[in-house]
Image (cartoon, rainbow over all chains, first blue to last red; front, side, top):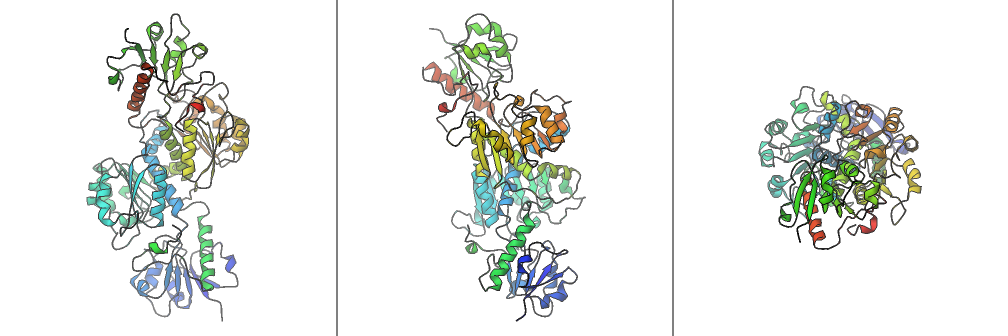
Length: 320
Length: 320
């Protein structure tokens, strides 16, 4: 029996695949050659996970890989209806991004509470101006998204003394359902979006929801750009419906230099980096190799995406 | 018996003294009139706690107040040898600043780990440049200062997964003595100074100690400015002996606009605000009123400073 063929969507050879030497034939594809190579692949590793080439190439002729892995938390770039309805297993990188993203959210919330952007502005002007910060202990956060990232964010904020509610698709132990979302938004000091991007969640943060929030509230998005109606957020900041926001993800990435988001009042713009900490690519490579060894030994794969829902469902989450 | 006389060193009338109406005669002094009013005062409230007027006025003629309260954590501005050797009780504002300062330190450490200053710089240029942050979980911190502020900082950093050691004057349960300081500095990713300013601690962060630290280390001072030899810190940053620093306190405050600290590489300058959160003056006023009521009822005062050591000693800390 010949070795399985692993097709990697990546511009450059990958780190950390050495352990698979002799166990797999590795081929590389780019966005242009992916369609023609798909029929011969047993496994597809979507290393360039910001590409939507898979979504475009999948509905083609010939056989399809049995397993597709994306080294990201979200699978929105990947899932087309034909892939969702196929027998192909899709897995994600659960376990890699949770703590870095939770730390990043804590960094943003604390920076806004202590007006660190204002401090850095004043420092550039060599201007000493004392101000009063907020104490985050005892404030209220609503974290939207009850996957492992949302729940890790909630644990981290709770550790800082922030009273934190988590909102998921369906209510369950310790997690609010969507029905509670609006009342929770209305009394939150911090609203954190860490939801998956699905048909149900696209555009969920719109003018109506920003209008519900307190004038002192701050909004943070580390999920996916299209969860937010960006023009509505800019308007909400302009009209001081909310006090500030921080976006790490955008409808279009990189954010075009002409976007009004860059200088919206009270908005922090960061370049989709919340989960990316030194060594992250190595960790993603090692995670895939571990998963490949399980797969080739016939053991069950972890992190299997529910392709109808568009994320890894809770019951798979044995680590939490 | 006439009411005791409370002398307040403050430019403006104070908030939150209403509860003392009828129990005390309140008089106000400024830096110029303090000396002449001291002999008639039973209690001195040093509301303008950044002033060193008490230190200058104390060694005068006539009787002295029996109790001096400063609404600050540090008492270094206050203590002159004559006050230290007198029978006058000195108290501080223990309990007000711990959590705000701990949050502020967490904000600085997370901001440096995630390069938030770099992100804000790039945002001003409308420039999208992805970078990798550090995960703080699993990094090492050394917190210098084992009072309630240092210990609250340590608890907060531990809650973020940072391996945190506390260094105090003498070793005791869970706290390292000064003997361990240098080895702890040598392996710390984060060095946080929250020590009281005394003859023993003045200038403790000097060229030798910055040289001990790792090139990747960051230094944070929320104690008092003279704990750090500022010119040595600038040199250490210039020579890349350490990767960054954040100072909230300075030898001279406000920091003069010509100071080289404003644009030292990798240095965050903030205007002595780490403990000051919305409502802090009210909380300080209420704390003094509570203490005054205890004092006038003959109950023991909390937060009594050991005037020889220059801080409230640990055994007084029943809340920890």
